[in-house]
Length: 466
Image 1 (tube, rainbow, N blue to C red):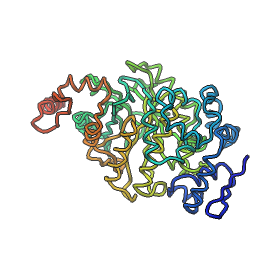
Image 2 (image 1 turned 90 degrees about the vertical axis):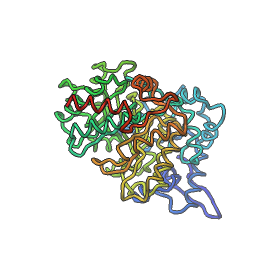
Image 3 (image 1 turned 180 degrees about the horizontal axis):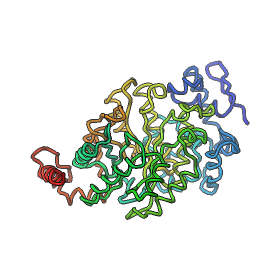
Image 4 (image 1 turned 90 degrees about the horizontal axis):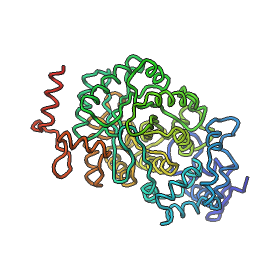
């Protein structure tokens, strides 16, 4: 449908279809170049963006990027689209939507009502027309609040996942890293472990340890072992202390098949977790991870650029009312996001698209050691995301995950972000920190020095328990 062509500097650029327009309009990234989808020049990229800006939003309801009959994610997107929510913007082009989202009229209440009327493809398309500052300004207006044992996503708050991974899943090592993170005020989003050995019995052991620690200190947070969803179902059937069900997801049925999942499996896991009734103030029980490049690496991207196919994964997340979603933005490697510039842009895009769709997006601000990136790039991205209102970030001991072998954020980075932006932890977790005497009179974390009385007491308790 339509004539996808634009003349620029005396040359006419033609695009075969809607997928080609979207791919060529994307910011430069190595994954699209690897797939042969990227614009061949900056001039072609500008032409694609001009074409995209003039396309009516309705085209995304008329031309599915993956045929409806062949893909359950496409069916989910179309079957759950809210025509009533879409109606106020149904006359707009993609460029018109950009202008509208940046307007004073599009405040938090308006954007919340609009979210069900937007498809992932609309969100991805409009993001391609935006500068980084546009992505930040609009994301900050999108507020998505979720609850389990505490409240995640409130304005003025920044939560964090405490990630105490260990290369051998040693319980003492994990407990030490967890204690360290708690003393820095991290862990209100979740205390979540990526298991080195992913089987049911090991997951039960890890969950029991985390749950015992949580109950011992009456910590108002949730715990998670990031095992495969089918293992999570077995853990729950065996009576394991499962708070949140985790799963990596992607934007096509074929890519999710590569993860060993489909929508029915996710529904089964969600129903099982809800039946446990472990939440105290809410019942958002799902935790999803995503990341640009997952579908391409599985050969399941259907000629769609990596940012657009990534955004389709947020339709999956949205359908299950998750407590947490995060993009592991730089984890997949330089084959998909080559350097710090590409990682920063992708992180802002992922956060913007998810929040616009009503998904509670956090971020693992990270990179692999063979990428052209460093910790200064991560400092930039974590700062920009906090300005944009990111729901949570991930922190590991010393910013170096010794099990997954990649670089993320450190516990003290969360203190920096909260200090600079005046952001606070989840309210229930903040009250707990005060009760534990881990805040000083000015509402700042007491530094975990050897002289800190809280640290000395906790170490003594753990020594006695051992």
